[in-house]
Length: 353
Image (cartoon, rainbow, N blue to C red):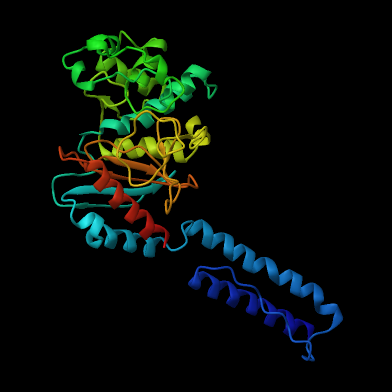
């Protein structure tokens, strides 16, 4: 009788695992009824023996589908990219969601953009420069470096248009007062590219042209990253394809770059009646700012870390640091970044529903 019960218990365990895999949630082996004549005191160890069967099945399922319903998530995000109001009115764009191992879902609307088309990403350059600085100093930022990456250094007189035809990082900073310090703004958030440009010169990057700057960034972040610069502006001159920027985000999400552990650290306020900020871009919510990236933690926000660019390139890393995403487009339209942000947020909601 004990042998018959052992076979029945094992079969029950396998059935529970199969049901769990179909439903996407952990199942437990059913306990034998106390009224069954098959159950004897000496059979109790057989119940404990049957439990690991479900555990092994659970581990195999989670390894095969770490995102718990990947096909469903892909379908939901693709539907949102095509039908959500925030995305539908935006025109052509490319979108991508992935994790540390690769792209999980992607798509295009229209024919203007693709994964491999280089784009000027504007202020999405900031997150890349922050990762460079953090990696360069081994994760040990000085107070001055921290102030610069939080846009509290006081160097907020920078006008990127004044950099036209400037061939080096230092020449760009020297144009028309770009490198002036506003002492009364020190210690207060002030959204401006001068903080990064001045920091770059203190790190010895002043003599680099756009080619030298790209080579230096790749030297520190990895030669596998195909990142270039259209101009020697560290906070806004990066030029990269969605595939190249996505590869950078994967290195962050996977923990291969030190900024992974510093995302959202040292947050500073950017707007509001109790905030001493000097200037901030138009945002839908009162977010905080961390090391050259936004923390989308305002009312109704999901806490993602993002670095939107003026012309609509919008990259993000999820609050749990497990996935990344991006909306890629390059348009000269008023507040194009806001439209891309709204669409990207819709994709995140679809992914997480």
